[in-house]
Length: 267
Image (cartoon, rainbow, N blue to C red; front, side, top):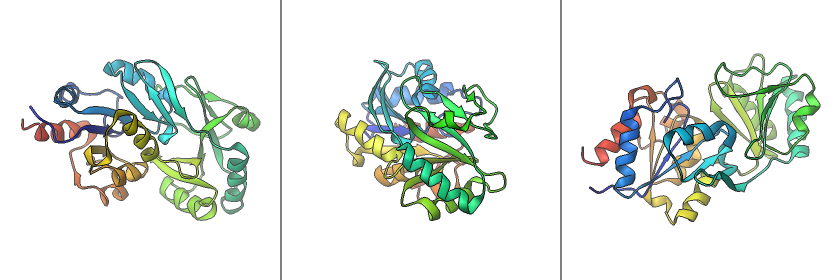
């Protein structure tokens, strides 16, 4: 059995994971068949390592994972960080100050660097209900107390698309701004993207972009689709990602990844 790509890059939320954070047996089997045919599966997620590790362990995943929007390349089998890029806190604070002159007060949360880096939510920041651990603080200074991989920003009135567009226009020369999920807007080091981390992981694996198929659902996956030979958007994907995808598959709830892999495997 042959497989036409050497690297399968998958996002997690809205892509590999169903809404209950599980991976279906069908998708597990399709990935296992593709890897048995010679491909390597690399998770490429906006989540930092602490929010990703339990999923990788459940999958029996021992290879490289790209976490934190490309900031971290993590070796799951060895439980160690191979690379880590941090956000300059002074630059990020300047970006927030400039943005707040246009938007008014923003609610912030901080993703801390490291294998055990916490996500710290400041006053007024609202995370969606779920199992991912968040430390809540009433002290805004606590957000800046340790090295960061990213900042989350939230506005009481602007939605994720609107806040992303405005932030890029105001502070796009200082930092990168991405929309990573419904209402999830993140500030990153300038020039960092999921594709940055994926290219580093691929180089370590001896695999080229031309040998890569990628799956995703949100605008932060656009650089990955630009890097990979073939980009597949989920049916539930953001319109901006669908616009640059080579094809659209079924949703994350309907085994969209498995459908494509099975087809490529000739099943």
